[in-house]
Length: 132
Image 1 (spheres, helix red, strand yellow):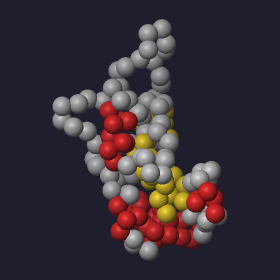
Image 2 (cartoon, one colour; image 1 turned 90 degrees about the horizontal axis):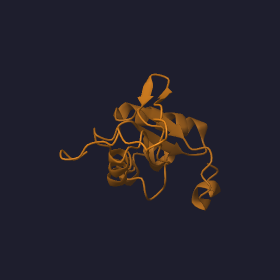
Image 3 (tube, one colour; image 1 turned 30 degrees about the vertical axis):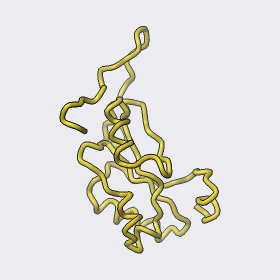
């Protein structure tokens, strides 16, 4: 987050109760507003803007488990995050459970993620054709 900006955690609409924070295990999510993972949209810049505007949790783009395991640079670049992008989840997809498990382990080892999210419903034809 830029030094001259602040996260909008104190904003609420007049007449509405303050939203409660969410919790997933030990992860505290400050706002119930959650950015969905979107291929081609949820890059670092977009995630940062959403967090500045009060989003409580952001996701990476859909990241191929095969690309992670095969160490493909373009795929791994989608897992690059900044310290200010927290909380954040890596969103991976694939059709082979063993490859998915290895990719999740690799993403966890990068150390920049609060959650590893497994795609279970993306309707994008490219993803559906791959059996993910």
